[in-house]
Amino acid sequence: MLTVVLMHSPFLGPSSMRPLADELASDGVAVLLVDLEMRINEAPVHQRLIGAFADALEDAGVGGTLVLVGHSGAGPLLPCFADALEMDVAGLVFLDSDLPTPGKAWRETVDPALVNQLKASVRDGRLPRWDRWFDSDPLKLVPAGLREEMRDEAPEVPWEFMKEQRPVVEWSGACGYVQLSSFYEDAAARAGELGWPVERLESHHLAAATSPSAVAAALKTVISKL
Image 1 (cartoon, one colour):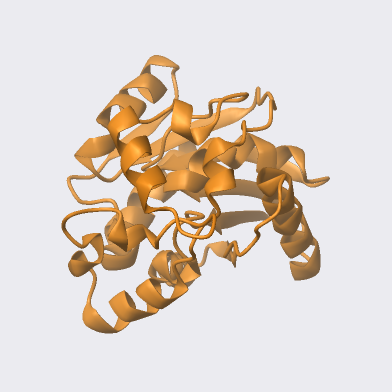
Image 2 (image 1 turned 60 degrees about the vertical axis):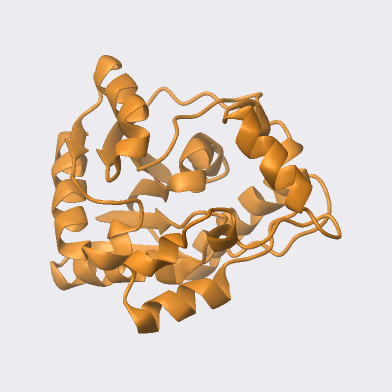
């Protein structure tokens, strides 16, 4: 039996992926939405996050074969998540995210202007919630009820998380990519160059919350090609 395991961005909460999980389940797909809400203030943050993920799957009693799907900031950590499991992982799917950069910190992989902007906003070692990183509220695309739930869940992530080097874990198995927004065009193009199956939607970064049917269809197409 194949189970699709959904991981939300560490900068958001599980409600950002719940509409997609519900859509997949309604289509008869075995799906597990892992709650990765991170409220950890001690290093090593990555190792604590990865350990929490492995514990969550063990507690859920999932068996069979898994496909891991990581949205946004969870995407680059997919090989680490897979490596932490004793279960069979058939493939990884990157959902509007960067590709893995083992050994590099987040702040080494993004625009230095954004790094400086966010560093200036740190208070008591923590970043503001994700929706406050931008001049325009990104959650305005989400319907009101879900928008407030997502806003309430968004953690104030420790700045240490952005400075830590990502674990060096190699993954030689199957991978796929689903692009939701133009921001990740380069990552999707790179995935295509690597020979991965790629599906593109003309949507936005939070489409898993607002257009779950379209995202589920794209995700199932990619998974079928892994």
